[in-house]
Image 1 (cartoon, one colour):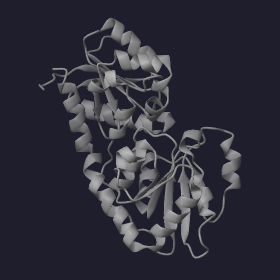
Image 2: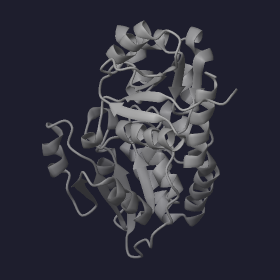
Image 3: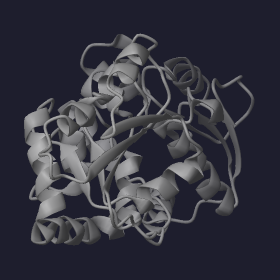
Image 4: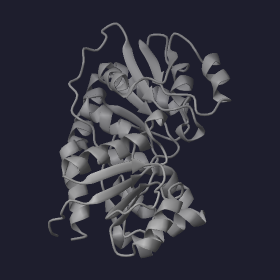
Length: 319
């Protein structure tokens, strides 16, 4: 390890601010961390060939063109590829561009420890785990007459976005749960289903600003993440850092964030099991307190200081 002087770094991301998705927020945080460390950083959708000391690319498949061009011109300088959920759990297993990005990268970054298991053995030695982060947010006053549950996911197939809506229909009549879903419409055909599912129990709010989304998480008693595929969901960090416990589908990307022994998992796509967990969290204070303790135990992994230090350590490897 050693000190890295200020560098000109190109940060490539296929999604800029208008996307309002997890990939953009990851890139935006790294942009802030790198600039605070004194580096000259430009965030772009595609590298234009201008001189740079390092390239950090989010998404092995979508950013492959920039990765390949940079590797061809600069075989020695830092070339870091951050692997997204669709990279780790889909693309690197069959897509030639994604696989080539693994080969070309000098360092690979996965966003939770289970991501390492998906990498070909030959590339694991150059992979590092860097957990995403969120600032601590003081829990806001939560409603006393309702038990509020938040879902934060754009409407697209990978998120299995309506699982909490289906589960809400199975809750007992005595339940005070109301689910509020934050997320934009990314697959137009899902709009009709979203409107059909509207009920006093479940309501789709559409896309909100990042700040308002975080405040809504903090005002909720619980957050549900039902995704089929996640590289390391930042919304888990945001819930944990707001003191809001999580119920999560038992996919590897969620287990890598919350730990093997977490009590709040439900089988992927199983709304009956999710409904049972929702009711248990509402009706059993001991269970809800367990979820809160387990999430609090993971919180040190999700601080901005931890993520920034891991990024600094990564760059120091190139000294």
